[in-house]
Length: 395
Image (cartoon, rainbow, N blue to C red; front, side, top):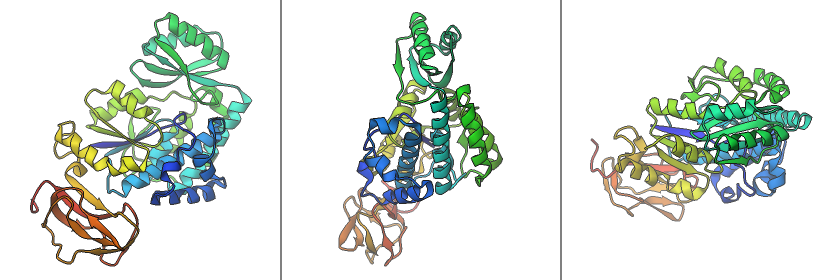
């Protein structure tokens, strides 16, 4: 059972969209620019580290890139059992689950970033990760500090994020080291997120949420606030508002997903932060990430290897056994005339053509069906044929 997970602010990097410029999913950038009335392409390709550090820039850029990656993965036909996103990533998860459409997601994320930027400009704040210390001792370090500092993220065993006034963060870090922390690391963000200092942003965002068409989720989305699965549309306005001023319960979320039967945690978006948190929290779970087209190309093979090594129970992961042949180019699809359901297909065998480009299978299996019609115009990476790998005939 696969979980799609989506990273939050802090995972952004300069030029993080460069690898996607020639991918069909890049078309989302133009739509995002229109919906936000901002130059999203600039944020993904040209913005430097200082520009991306601004909350209003990092949130929009991270969300759009996550949606580009999601679109690319969905072109493979891969579907999850659950969704979850860390902080900002919760908006990506909700879009992936159909709670909001992409344009609405862009507009909400843009407003969220602007609201949080305004709150951060009003009251200076920052965040830091405390490593190697139990949750309760990190809470103690915050209570023993004079000034505004709180726990913001319960991320994984031995990793807790604190948030608040910069001077208070520094003092709490010193106390945490005295209590046995291995390290205190500053986080590249520009505000005291998930604390009461974000109350002005919560009030501003509430108005936008009230005007947004939120729908029931296609798949359960695990919320940051309570680490519980939610599908009802009515739940999310309150959950997203509360998220701004309360800690992210990511460690509890991972355990809840594990108890629900999740076996593969697939991070979609920039960076590998969430993949690392799964490694620290859940022993034996399969951890995969996609943030480049090259990783999309190898994803099905990675899932297949996970299944073959026993990391995923047989029957729980459809696409570890049933694989898709995707288009190598954009053009008109012409399948081989003699292809029939149940045909044994060898690795490298010709299945047809897209324009002047040959379509060959990347693996052995039996043909279960064609996913594009003869004469249909298809795009690069669009699924064309469905094979059951390693078998002959239809079971």
